[in-house]
Image 1: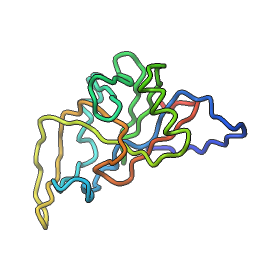
Image 2: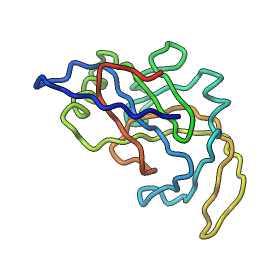
Image 3: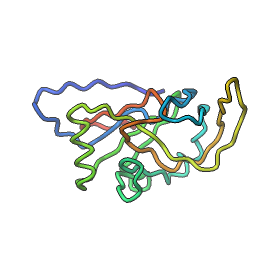
Length: 158
């Protein structure tokens, strides 16, 4: 179960260093940004999450590491949606991302996968993926799937 948390901010600046939200909602088909027409079933990433090797990069750029499961700076929750929490470093690209989130820019999440297992193909060529190796979950400006979110705050999800 993914819990939605609401945070009230009374100061003019939020002092949080944690990004969290939804990286993917299972069953949602890629939107207009991505023409591959695929959806992932719940549990598709469970083996990858359990292996503890997933990372997060700013803008899908593997030179801009935001966090990793191994270091404990990236935490993932899995249920009807893939939830995440990233503790940001003070690297300039992380500060830039934090600033964009703080000012309310419309950011979303994307992810990188490898080794897709095709379950079925449904009407209009939509591929349903039952298992995939999840490599990263990454904040982006134009996510391929709807329903993702990036929220800046000082608490983390577990």
